[in-house]
Amino acid sequence: MKPSRTMLLPGVFLGAAIASGCGPARAAAAGPANVPDTDIAVYALSRGAGVPDPARQALRSARDLFSRWGAEGRVVDLIDTPVGPQGDTRLCARFASPADAATALMQLDALGLGVDLFQVRPEPCAPPPRILK
Image (tube, rainbow, N blue to C red):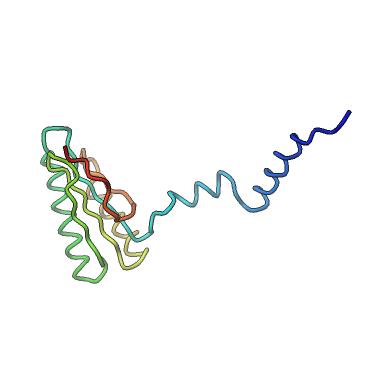
C-alpha cells in the first residue's frame, strides 16, 4: 500500500501555521484588519423617522469633545459626513496618537452608554459609501 500524499499536505500546512504563530488566538488579538489605531467614528442613526433626540444630543456632545480635543492638538482631522436621508451622521476623528484615541474611545463609549442609535466604532476615517436615496 502506497502512503497517501494528500494526508501529508494538511499536516505540513498545520505545522507551518503553528510554527509561524498563526491561529485563532493571534487573529483575535490583532483585531479588525486595516483599522488605524488612531481613528474613531461616531454615528447618530435613525430608523426612518429621523435621528431620535437622545442620539442627536449625544452627537452634539461628541462634536463638543472633538472640538475641545482639536484645540488641545489631540484630534488632527475630523470628517463630518451625512450618511442617510433622515439626518444620519458619521463623525470620524483621526487622533494624534494611539493613546489619545484610546482615551477618547473610553469617553465616547461612556457618552453613548444606553443611547439607542448612537454608535462608537474604531474604524478608518475614509468616508463610507453614501446610502442616501
